Image (tube, rainbow, N blue to C red; front, side):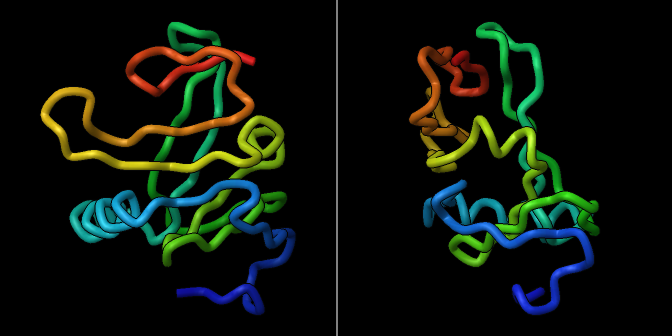
Length: 123
């Protein structure tokens, strides 16, 4: 794991005021990191699309990019680009293993409306 003192050039340190990972999401993320083996960072992006105009994207990556914001939450190493950070501030990533409506969900205080699946929102 990388500490804030060893951040690559061009990567800024953020904190949980930007995005926070719940304990249940952290447990699931570490299981997925081990299973997928694609990298130890979880990149969170917001892109256009989805039923409400904007949607969340997550993927595991091995390296950061210049301009990324690094956040360590519940042991999870998150990377967020500066554009996504504008929409993400104060968001919590949660996880539920329920059969109905389970999976990862973003609780974003900036969203004016979101779909029932929790993957799409608008401002």
